Length: 303
Image (cartoon, rainbow, N blue to C red):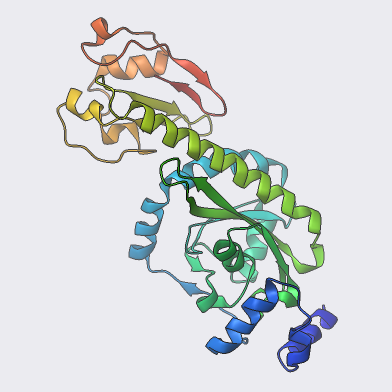
């Protein structure tokens, strides 16, 4: 650890050593120097509760799809100091995933939800570089520009979604595997890459469904039941569902079902359909499409 700390200090005192850093680290270290970012920074900028709530609301899709993947994986990381972190497209840490050992270690490193990992806040790091380059990247120990992350090894992969209309790549955020520096391993990068690809695929499928059924004359809504907590939430919907229900349009992706439908004991028949996985027809329901509930991978039922 002392040698790694000494290397970090030498990098900040000898520009010739900085020039030996590989790209893209070299580019971002030089930019931090030009910006005058203090390398001794050892704490993260923390978003206010109000700002963080807005960030979470804007990130609800990646939050929901990442939960599916990461809550499954972290069952096997109970006694490990390795875990995952979810970030929005600006580098805000949305959620930490891991066992108690990992969460305790993060606390000791001052790594917490609501912290900003962008370059201006904490210098060049795997998250800030990965977001800007839109590529998977790892940064360990003394390669981090600021002191705050010198004890970490971070492996980051962004969520990149292709827009079928503009053919442009859309950055949605990303996933990082975080470990103590002494446990660094270049092979770890494959795990956030796999997770990011899974999340991006689900994002693409959800967007494709929305585009396909946007002009559908019948109301469509898919309700998922989370197998982890048994709670139903709205997976996706089209705009016509609001006309069918005679209510104002709003974006209800991944919201609780009772955001749109009154909870029990009201709407008894509706909640029975969900609870009992019933098959209904448009004639029986009075509106909407005839549907056959089906088992969904990871999350239970939908109608």
